[in-house]
Structure formats: C-alpha cells, structure tokens
Image (cartoon, rainbow, N blue to C red; front, side, top):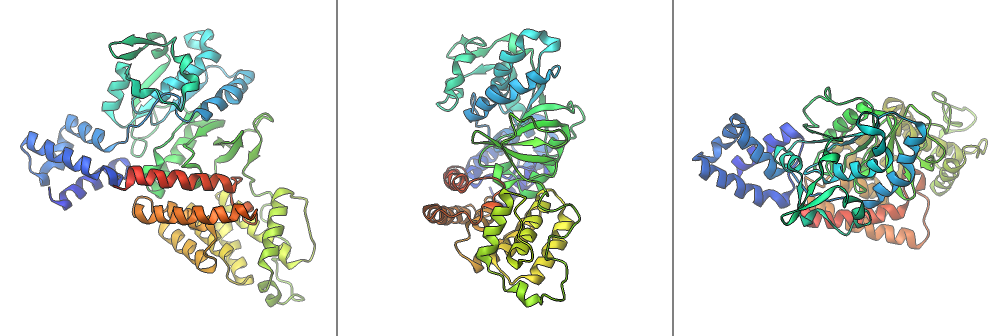
Length: 477
C-alpha cells in the first residue's frame, strides 16, 4: 500500500475523531487496511471512500486504530480515593441519584469497576434512588463486547487486585471467562459517543464523578482543550474529574481546579466550595493580589529608574515567589526582587485562571522591566500552551532552556508538546529532564516550586519515567 494512501486514511480518522495514531500501531493498521482491501476487492486509494460508505467497514477501521487497553480497577489509587473520601462525601451531602461517567470506557471494565464500588454506597436505595453509571466510547466493536458482558482473564491485573474480591458478587463463571450479572447491568447506560465531534446533548448535565483516563494522550493539544471544555460543561459544580496520572501535568482549564488528596491528583469543577475533608493541596487562583490591581512596584515610579528593576537578583526573586506562594501575607515593601516575584506569581495565576489577556499584558510589562531570563521565557511558553498554540509554546520553552539548560520545567513541557510528532525526540527530552530532576532533587532544589501547580518535583520525575516507558512501548517501534 502506498504511503500517501495510508496517510490519507490516518489523517481522515484524526480529523473525524481527534485521535492521532501512535507510530507503534502503524504497521498493524497498514496490515489491517491491506487485508481489508484484498477482502473487499478495493484498491488502496478507494478504501477510505468505501469505509465512509459502509458503516460496518468504518466500525472495523475504528476498532483497528483505537487503543482498547483496559482492566478492572485500573490505577487502583483512584478507586481508593473514591471509597475513602469522595463517595462518603457525596453520601453525606445526600445527593439524590448521583451520576457517574466512564467517558472512554472501551470494553467496560472501568465502568463496571465504578458501578461495583458505587453499589456499596447506594445499592440498597433501589433503582430509582440509587446511582447510574454512564459508559461511552467511540468504538462500536468495543461497546458490543461490553454489552455482551463477557470478560477474560486479561481483565484482571495486579494493579487493581485489592478490589477484585468485590467483583465476585457480580461476575459468574462462563466458559473460560466471566459474565457480568444482570443486576449490575441495570445501573449502566452504554452509549456510543465521539467525544471530539458529537454534541453532549443526550448526556445528563450534572455528573458527580467523571473518569476520562488514558485517552487525551493520543490527541493534539487543541483537541485536548476542546474535549476538556465539553466535559466541564456536563460536570456538576464541585464534581470530580479523573484523568490518568501521566496526563495531569499537561492540562488546565479555567472551570477546573487542580486538587491533590493523599498523593492522588484530580480536577474539581469550580462553582461550589470544597468541603474541608477534601481541600488539601489545591491550585491557587489569582489570590496573590486583588484582581485588576497591579502588584506593588509594577506601576511606573519616577524615583526608581527602570535599570534597577532590570538588574534584580533572580535567585532572590524565586525565593520570594515561593514564600509568597506559601503565605499570601508575606510582604516586603519597596523591594525590587519582591515586586518582581509578585509579578511572576500574578502572571502564572492569571494564566491558570484562563485570564490570558490580562496575563499577556502583565507578562509584557514584566518583560520590559526585567532582563531576559528562563522564567520569563517559560511563562511566555506556558501562556502559549494554554492558548493552544503548541508551536509558539515550544519555541519559548526552548528559549528558556537556552538561558538555563538545566531548567527542567521547560524541558518537561517541551517534550510533552512533541510526543506524537517526534516520539524519539520526546523520549530523549524526557530522559534529559529526568537526569536534571535527579540533580535538582539531590541538592534539595525548591526554587521552581511556585511554577509547578502544586505538584512536587518527585511527581514530575515519576512522570518522566512513565512517559519514557510509554513512548518506548506505544509510540516507538
């Protein structure tokens, strides 16, 4: 099959679904298309037209290009948090009939896991007063397997094994596998949904918990932003959104607040005050200075020449920024380093609050007043990334690294922006980033903490390792 015909098919799938095929799957999909062409008697250049005209054929193509890796209670710590904190909190609030959504459910193991755990809390309340788990996926073939309710031994892994005893009441032996009990199936609403192209009009608008894990990593940055916005629109105020651990540092949304409890990171939809039992480490919004008020020292001051501002000690600026981030009461009057620190914090917090125009104006003022440095370049790149301008973002991250090659936050995000386009290079960047982080941790570094959205450096070190492994396994032959 000619390369340009194959590329045409893959580009059509990406355009229709938002999914970018990992390079490691190219050979498998090429072989699939070649076999289908032989079976249908179609030429490679006409296969795409044939697939578009034939619903069954297009379903086969989707099944070939989608990643259907799943198993029961995957990322077990997420379910521990549901059991110990979130579901009890929802019960205490007395919310009638909580809605839960497995947004990319594949063959259903995640949705079943959510239903089994929810059954412990709301199962005795009856069908009308209990709970419902919605399960959606783009792949009709996967949904047919889910609807059939038969699971093999591959659905059971070491990760998640702590909850396997709960499954015994809902799975019965069937041939060499297990069949899902009809009682639990009554709690499930299985639907086909293209998260990228379809509207969410048929979904309820008040989900208490949404699981959407290990899918955004196969999508470009603008697609991630579009889908995240749509999911936020159907999440109830105060609702919980879980992504995979590898996806969390790469995303932000103005209606979602990054939260950490017991080492687990997730998002909560703003609009409702978080209960004290869950308010642990939350991304700080623009609380450094009142909205619309310039940080001290940024207003023109004739008695203080601009050169004094440009010649600040960057080490002191970073130190003050971390202190201010930890304690908003921290204040040093008429100090250029402290003034610069407040400015950097305000830029960063306004980006996170999606007040990008304000952030851009303030950052431009900071760039006029401070000498060029890696932090300013990083913030410019971070702003571009939040504006869904990946090429510009990476250019500024590279400028930050030109100022300071060991500035690992810029390298981490730079690598994240080229995972699909250049997986080999991304893996190399993650390896360098991991080494820089090891040196940073070894000397007890903390100067970049205010830039990490409440994540710890060890978290980024762990994520570098996960991405190196994942890129090697899924994106690189």
